[in-house]
Image (cartoon, rainbow, N blue to C red; front, side):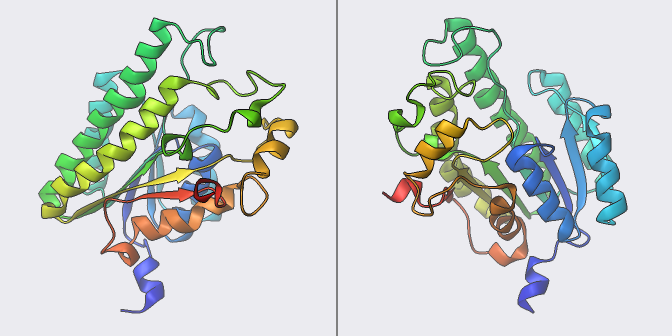
Length: 268
């Protein structure tokens, strides 16, 4: 098969959570560029309207938004049920969604029990339940690709000097629960790949590093960039290639991997 045909997502249905912002937006745009039908799970259909309109008008692909709350089991079940009924088959699933624990204090290292429990319950337990529901659907078709968002912070310890002078620069930056959620997901990917492989389903994770955005503190950006081999934070384009690779037939023999997308941060 032609290499470019292997990368094509034309006629493929993709369910993506958290695909409106940050790295998730890059993933959505990459898949739309490749011709995928986009099923976007967002906290409300209204919040996703602008992006859905853009995908339809500028990318010329089928796109539809579905209301979704990762903190609601009923909502998780309804999302999978509605998307499978609407599409007939989910060919690829991209899971970017996560929550930042509620509350104005203790967002950094000193999270209280309620915040820790909320983070683990939703970012770990609820996410795994969602992934398993999608997996049960893919098993019926004996094919599918799952691409989950881990983090380089789930692979290595945090370089504390990145945050010098800015102890709460970004909510969750020092969160111990974040490390638990992301490292746990990385371990789960390996176990899930060993199980789903018999059904022709591939499971991989991308583990991004810091992303340059309008909310990035410039002091953090400078300090963090010193620890990357490429000397900079990522931009939204930097996630696109690996997402398309892992979602498409171009990676038909790749499963069970946690792939850092971090400018070389984790190899130092």
